Image 1: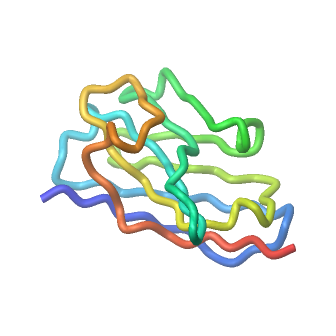
Image 2: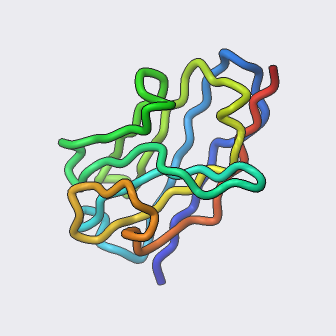
Length: 124
């Protein structure tokens, strides 16, 4: 079965950096665009970043542009989210997701598989 396993979350201070990883198994990784979403308590799940199957195209939410970078290693079936200059408003559970045969959607409804999430907490 398909598994997406996120790691790398934690508690950091404002201005710090974190790198999230998402290891995929049970699927043909290069058939999928990969995305990161986040959900804060009491809020909807929001788009953060997406990357096409070959890494050639990326897109970011305006709130994270210039601070976050999405990348992927197809040899390792892994997608990453490098988060710099973290702010308290970045606090959320971060989810990775896989979107079959897509160049990269920003809508969570388009994604076929989801991980369980990893908590990121940024203190001020």
